[in-house]
Amino acid sequence: MFKAKKLDRLVAAGIITQTQKLQILAFEEGKNGFPLVQKALAVLGVFMVGLGVISLVAANWYEFGGDVKLAMMFALLCGAVYMALRTEKAGQKFTAEKWRLGLFFLCGAAIGLIIQIFQLSGGKMYTPFGFWALVTLPLLFVSRQKLVSYFWMPLFLGWLFCFATDYLAEWLAYC
Image (cartoon, rainbow, N blue to C red):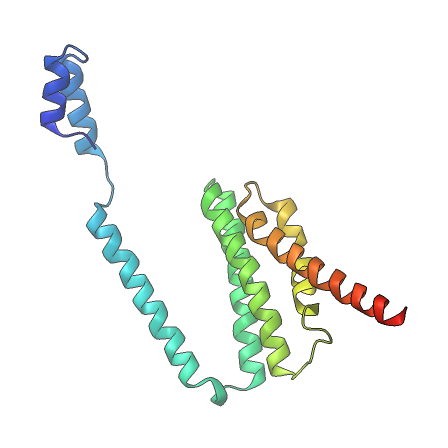
């Protein structure tokens, strides 16, 4: 955003002309964007509403049946896929990438929820992480940017390290 005083100094220095100054000011007035304070208040509002919903669900968590929990998670997963496809079709590539990242995290949450609902042990502690990496692997091929891979690679490498050390410990115990 350009201020009139800065533009006056540029005109005085001969870098831009008076006509260019007026064009810049007209362009800046025509911009239809949120000021920083409005953006901050909008983010704070969304955060507070989300926190309220999470608190409401957490306070009544044990009153929800397993079917309701699974239906809510399935609806969230389908909604994230739908929004990723919709924003990709609309040409909003970075927004679609953020929806894919949300889908990545929702897949991990869904795995944890299924383990919690059905009281699964999962075998080794790192097994759900390997399953999470396997299930979300196609997101790496669909993504146009590297946002999902920034989180997928540490997940996979952490699982690989845990698996390798456990396998090595069992092999050494066998020998």
